[in-house]
Image (tube, rainbow, N blue to C red; front, side, top):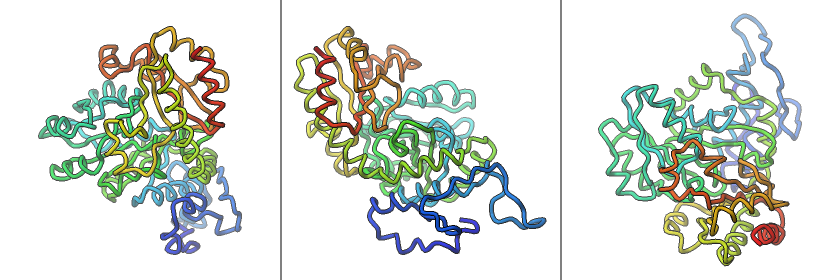
Length: 392
């Protein structure tokens, strides 16, 4: 932690439960001034004391105290060795994929966020990197798609928006035997409900814009690693690609993380109520929610997570019904993001997965009748009433 290292005794915090770690972070308060809210170091550069003698910070693109506090906090929460804060979730995905080289092969979840799909389809081929999209909830399919040049498996679990769940520990075990790096997008469950590195993964990726920040008012991305060698590659990418997180955005995310436990509990509680209600509505044909005991991957979910989160998707009886819902919802907002305190609904085939070819979307189940709902922390009865009037 540069010059701050003498001011913290984190050993005392190691046995704290995650709720306490979320509130207090790495240093938590400012060791120099005692400020309870860690300061925003809104500066581009730092003064040198003398030639070759700095206070440990030179230039904000490379290091900044506010950003570093957030990076260390994320490493603590994910139980990794080092964290890296970037300007967006997409920047974090690119950072994780930067370990791949020409002629490498990467396996990705078939039902993956549209932006990640687009990177795999357009950016990676330009670097002569081969991609395969596989249903990673099926271990045998994963095994069947491993090649001699497979260097990474990029897992999204649960997936966005079909809510498939991959067995992180089992995939990691197989990957390690073949020298394959395991990266996991942990955006939907956060380290509060799921810790991929403790299950065998090498890299964890987040869109911090979503649940971690939690208020739909800033953007951030994170990569957390277990291995120093991989960490050095991440740091080099961040330094030379210039996708660093701004100090103000880092501070907003630190503030959001403090209430992550309370928010995730409420998101999850509300989502179960809303999903159950939707399941019994005559115009709803199917609900995708990992908290249902009859979900095909439920046993995997309860093995590797401590909660179900606030995301669900559902298919209605017709395109007309789907369009009517997004037009008529009132308290629920029609928007393209997720994970904030407000409930957001979206139409994936147009908003989040428009770049995915129609035949691929249809095969996955992302059709004209399909909606995704990020359940917020409002009163669950009010969320249900809004859906009820929209479905009339």
